[in-house]
Image (cartoon, rainbow, N blue to C red):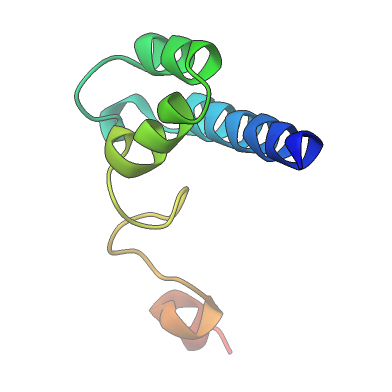
Length: 81
């Protein structure tokens, strides 16, 4: 059981750290990305969960707000068909 919890913690930490580093600066809330990265690495469970809950703006990561989500939502693409 301890091995499973350790692997889950490691996976969560890696996911949160990569997400933090790839998030644009204007979407990071409360403090700087450097602080979030240090918190994620140094405080297991709490750091990664804090980042995922409060560190970034809500919405799909990497998706432009208000832009087309697929070819069928892009009027320029549909016009060229």
